[in-house]
Image 1 (cartoon, rainbow, N blue to C red):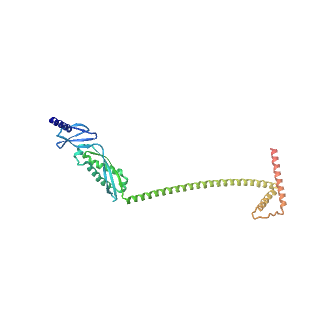
Image 2 (image 1 turned 135 degrees about the vertical axis):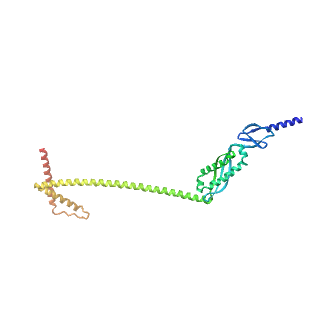
Image 3 (image 1 turned 45 degrees about the horizontal axis):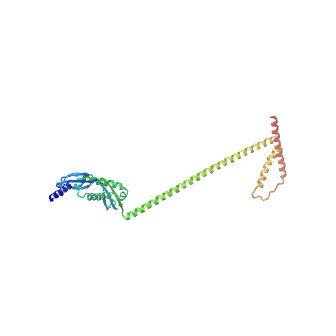
Length: 308
């Protein structure tokens, strides 16, 4: 019974040593007397017990490594605190297991040194404004360095870039000054546009006013021209009547001038008293002569109409 029990226990140990179940997302390396022979993929596998053994159990999924914060001096001698995260994935389990000792520690230190190199080669303004460029340069360098280890660096991201407090304060003042400058520029442009619009409106107003004055002057000139034409016709008629010996025409001409002069005398602002001249009776006679002249003109017009 004891022998059967020992055989049963031995069988269980042999099966345990010979049968290996590899979970999804992992790969096991197999070593025979300490020498690597093959890699076990996810699933159920059989190995030679007591001869073969599992060397390393490698995680084949993408993993994230934290790169600790460090102080970096930029090219223009500014101190910047920088940290990062690295995303890696083991592509070859055997190389990742046997080509480097402590894979995670090696990648983290590689990232630390390259962050110092890349950030230190740039000025502070470039470091703060070109984070994508820093990430791209770090990815290229670190991926090339880890390729012999069977590792693929999928991406690396600078997580934080913190300049010193005095530089942060100076940047805040600079940003405030820039915003005030832009506000002043916008306000000045608004005032300029407003002044231009006011000047344009005043210009249009003056143009319209000048056009109005020109139209009024044109109308006044036309009225004076017509008055002058009428005066010329009247003078011509009087001259023709005088040439024919008609005394009423002379009386009309003199009476008209006399009445105009008397009207100016009466409408003067400094004239408080209007003195009627002694010859006022002759004005009545002159007006009578005007009436006779007008009557003669009507008779002549009627005679011409009958002859027609």
